[in-house]
Image (cartoon, rainbow, N blue to C red; front, top):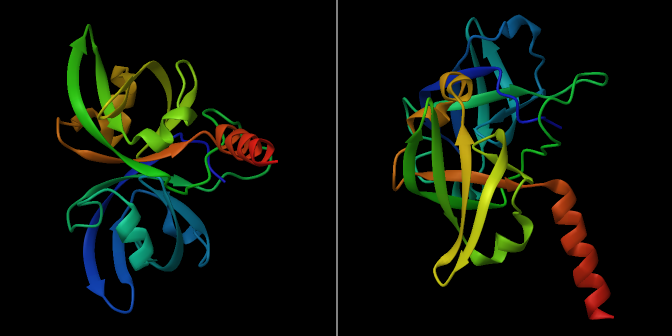
Amino acid sequence: MFTGIITDIGTIEAIEQRGDLRIRIATGYDTATIDLGASIACSGVCLTVIDTGPGWFAVDVSGESVARTAQGQWNQGRRLNLERAMKLGDELGGHIVTGHVDGIAEVVDVATVGDSRTITFRLARDLAPFVAAKGSVTVDGVSLTVNTVADGADGMRFTINLIPHTQAVTTLGTLAVGQAVNIEIDVLARYLGRMRAVLEAR
């Protein structure tokens, strides 16, 4: 379980194609404190640590995960938003995040508003019911508040605001039009959607 509050930006420094994709990620974390089998969210994807060394940890990324995450996510040199799994008693600074990607969104507009940036994303229509204005959404592992939502023929568009701090401590400050990002909807919205579907099917 995670909160969507990023605590490090890692960089993919090596990739090895085995049965799965083995990836070594450079990090500022004290890797002596990371147990094998621990979970770390990598740009919104919950992955299991299978090896560590000074300044790096390694994970295996299955073909299923590669297929369901943003294109270019697992390229050498790619910067990743990192968050270690929360511990019982930790402050829930963002919202409850599972590390399971629900879909991919595309950046369709970037605008500067004062010192902040407003980013507009296009998301597939099947996820539209789970994203609401002033609700929570996770973008590449970052917990954010949705500003506006607009439905259209080509999908749903929603906007978020990035303050200077978020731009500085995550990879979202460099987002550009056309870039793909991982989206996780609010877990409460997911369960409410499932409940409604079951009730309507009765």
